[in-house]
Length: 573
Image 1 (cartoon, rainbow, N blue to C red):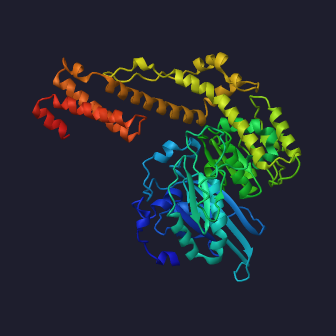
Image 2 (cartoon, rainbow, N blue to C red):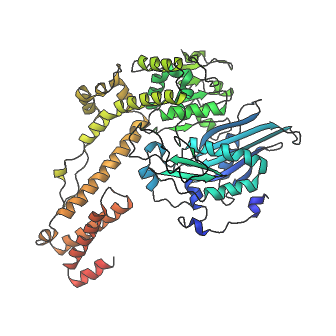
Image 3 (cartoon, rainbow, N blue to C red):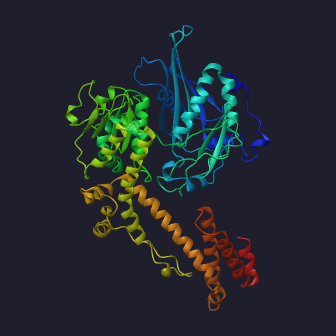
């Protein structure tokens, strides 16, 4: 039994008063920390889960063990960092983090806390060690979280993993205690997060941020000693470095992501695989990528059979793999991106070619995009020229990444804005919302009507790219990304209608309405208003608090006008 398990449940501390449960603040960021080691008899084995009372199912433990080590033999010694994402097994479970959903309401859709998946952020060390039977020390420290903060957690691992490998459990317990003092991630706030004598400063992005706005600005530094380690972003990768071998195909990759096409990324290491998958899924921001994605996937994964079967079409998912065995088992997938090691150089890296899938046969297959896909839009040659000029002028990678991100953002916005405009036109007029009738319905989305609207309000207004935009929209309507976008917008519009209806009720003359109404009608109104009030508070509708208070007063006024026996019944539902 390890030292941490013997320690027993940790007592609550007064300092963590903001969270009523032990480990509440810790769980706002990280679900648990795992240590995976290599056992000669068992293979990968879970050495430690901390906090020790955090419950992972056996299936989750097995998956984390396999996903925390490189899949194919890597003779490379040293430290490796990568990430994975796995499906939660065994249904929902209680967390010490008490969240009323505020974070997900205020965070960008692309950074919401996952409900059914965990992210794993891995720091793997492989070094020669004569004291070990195998002659090697092989161990991974893994942060398991529902937050997609790849930069923050990999930075955190760089600080704590080397120290942990030297000092083991006591060091890990001290770090977890420090994290349990952190303030929760609140969108829009800049936070100082102390750990191991370093203060990490981050800004948590908010839904109201202007897309493409500048990253965190340093603040409150005069009071901080030592000066903080400022992370420009909790989640944004170096896109230019990730995409350097495929820059001339960025248009095709954006379309494949937009349409939710099944794709395999074959890479030489879990680092390259996970970075490429996360970079691809971030291409659509601020649109949320609604399909499944696995930054790193192994042959031991529980979904391996599901993905490799040839009896049905591949699912809408992007998987990152490193084992050459996948070249044979995933040959039937429609889009396979094979990349080599990512190396930054002073020149434009060799660009991979688009090749026919039939050529993907041997284990030593060359890098390339193996697909028969034909893009709907033409390539943007100006972007390539600007990036080339940046390489020639030795422009920093972060500036090149910003150029690339801005290009992808404008492309996505050009595509989505016509959809947003059409969707807004389906909203009933405000004058159609009357206090004593149910709010009118949002009109149905008609694809043909939308297509007609593109003639005068299409992407050509904001984007210079030519091509078959109509064909791209038609394919998009069949994708999970359209379904996810439509459901989200429809839900927001329905809530707005509810809010407008409550405001209309508040402005109405309730006493005049009651004059010619029967008791049954008045009681019915009380019950409906109460239901609306509960829904407004539970669903956090966009309604001012004073509006809700006025509705409460209206309910009291209406009840006060009724006979005493009815009043007694309504006051004690």
